[in-house]
Length: 314
Length: 273
Image 1 (spheres, chains in turn blue, red):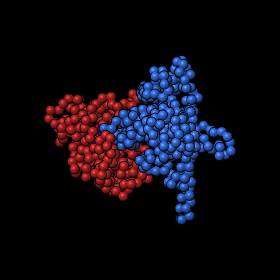
Image 2 (image 1 turned 45 degrees about the vertical axis):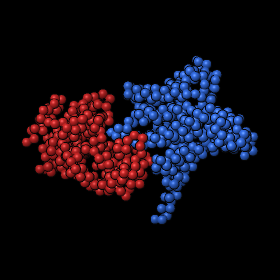
Image 3 (image 1 turned 60 degrees about the vertical axis):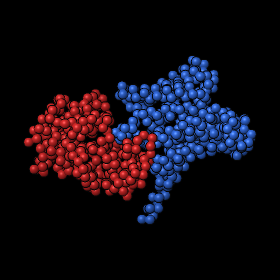
Image 4 (image 1 turned 90 degrees about the vertical axis):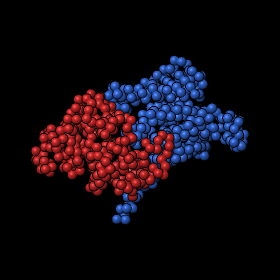
């Protein structure tokens, strides 16, 4: 139990909070047909992260988050500007801004010597889930001990705060997000600015992406923005239920993915473990495939089965 | 006959104040509206005052800027010039008096929402920021669904409804908004006969309640039966007024050019006599 608490639990928490933060926001990205916005944002924030890091010299800090948020807002404005001035579609504008900002981030990273300190490309892709430790934990009671909990790695606490923040924003602005996602024109006539709401969404996505990506890497971040929401969409026709299901799917992926990564090879007789972040993404993908096949109304196999039966009944 | 109205409109078109009219009485007054997409003008200097408590059809050929007129007048899309007044107020501060019904294709019907959810959205303005709609809003939304004969489908996901039923949900949403001016973009496009009848009935009730209703309409055959007034556009203002005086072969020729066969014109003319 001690080993589990010290070595596994922090990683599980990290993976699960990252999955939750991205998975919940992903609902609105998927509904707005902007699923790849998560991808774009998780790349354009790099220059912001580097600048934030240069100011603070700390890899898990508020300045980095602020830098990322600012970079995201600047990017959204640049995309809009290029779209208007260049008269081109937003996908193309997104492509231009996304590569330029990412390249700027890489140049900054190389030129300023920040590359030495945990901010390298590999880290950015695969994350560093397994390095989270809680060596102070000795028994289950520590889970209820505030002082011991505060000794959890900074990344865990930070992701917890970000997840909580996202949950609060979604609950408070649920109606506004729903309306502006479904019918921006009506939203405008009712006085709910779709522009403000989508900017809020983008900033939240940037914050989630940054908080998650130092821990779990950008691959998992992108997977989590899309998979839980898309899975939940297959299972319900109600937005509130969809949000709830996507949360459950994120939890399942986070916990299940880590356990499969850490112990799966062991169960099969091998003596190594695989990348937890990768396994979490794979689990989320697998859950989505299951939903696509067996969902009660939209599942491919379910539909086939129903067609067969109704054909027989006729 | 109607010279007064004609004159007022002509003067308004030149952007000068008209002494004999009280702007507070005008539910929907547009002046000098010009819109361009990618440097190509779509609407050119259109001025129009909607008659209060009347049902007006906005007609014109494809690409005449009918939908653009509504959207630009509401400020939903950028305009080069022009302004809209609602009961004498700038439209921006009077949007709560307006219910806009977009074309059915404007939204994603796969969205996870029920018919009741969509109607409730019309009430979000009254609910206000941060607050969740309550029981009274729900009841109001149900009533609106009832008015269009859709109460049995309240809990159906909107993607599972037919085109006509979706249109009726949109209509119910605008009823729930409880506005003074109703602007509808092609509510009759692609609907079944039952829906068409239901919509016409609702439009009549709105007019009876002294609401001002403007409807983008495609089917010239039914203009006479459904509407009391028309506004005819073809990239610019062509004509407006009561159906009897403005819906003439001459105006139609002007708006549609060669696109209407002369036999069609004859038929319509015969109908309006």
